[in-house]
Image (cartoon, rainbow, N blue to C red; front, side):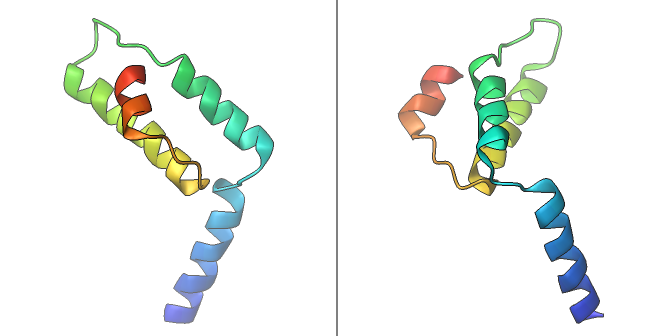
Length: 72
């Protein structure tokens, strides 16, 4: 079971965590166009922002804390 789980996980990573230039550019576009919507709960918007930052970590792109604060 562990070998199957490991194989499936690696396959999912290759399908969904592509570290290509195009992937990074799409993430950057999402980050730089992220805005707070007054119709949504603040908690949900902060969660979306954190998820976006986690996507950057997954493609090995570091966003400095200062830059994160400015973007938020």
